[in-house]
Image (cartoon, rainbow, N blue to C red; front, side, top):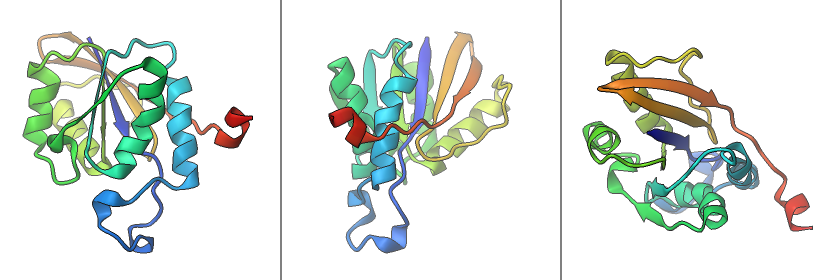
Length: 161
């Protein structure tokens, strides 16, 4: 079973947004990263998309959902203040087939640290820049092999034309 752990795309600086942080949208660069995610995951099966309820996470995953004709399931546990134990429960117990989990850097760091303590196998150093995806392949009881998929930004203006 494969799970993709995706960090939302660039949303600019928190201080540059006047409204509630949950409503902070992606920047133009972040929108390009969202389009890049479609290409980055094109060779992988995606059957389900779960996402933080924040605007920036929803916007990051929308192009992929559109491309795969899938709905987006908002999950509070994937939010900035979510409980890492709930994400671990989602990851291990829900048996998500080929799922994408879109969340925030804070949650990705907590999850990767937890998985590392349980024997995560990752040939690359753990990192989580905006727009990234980690491919997490569960190969047995509590055994996870990870592969880093770097952010890819596609210019939306070229895609529209």
